[in-house]
Length: 244
Image (tube, rainbow, N blue to C red; front, side):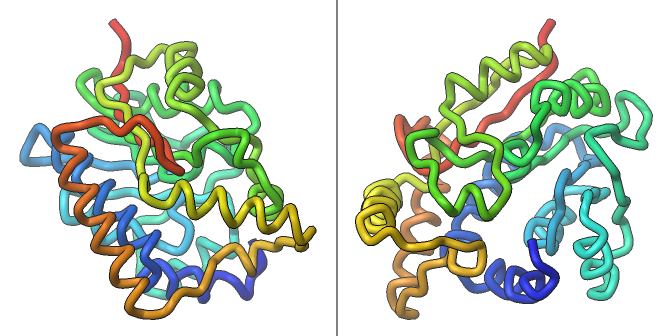
């Protein structure tokens, strides 16, 4: 990500329907995962901090990121518990955290199974890993290229990678369900018009009323994740524990 995009991203995380709605979905998963009063969290790939305040409402949260610019941006805006990492290796002892959160991070990592093993190493025996990733390789586009994605996932492929890393699923579902036909439509339009896509244009600007409507749809979806697992969507969300 270019330096100039960090401020834009931070603002989008506060106002754009996808970020606000996804955060509510993740919040529900963290709420269900919390199993003790003192709950420690490791936030992988904290970026511009869109998930930090929410996670800190559940427990003491340590954040890591590989980007010097992201770390600089976060510290400038008052966040203290941030650690710079250089690769998938984490500078923390084994069995340190009750939860690892990696929200749209794994798709950026070439050796994703090795990353999952490292995340497993730092969770306690009764700990959990909560992951979100973009769905469906057939939705691959210039957006993925500009954002330096290595792959997109299905529930099956994410679960297979986790199993190889010694993890078992507790809950798995697709998410951001209503947006699937919209994303398919935009992808087809991009291909038809042969539009050049960059990370700066990866957001589709919508009127404020539509932004509010989409946000409310995702708030409703977040409640449904309590009782159902969705069979399709533009994201995959899953909770894993250490396999026996």
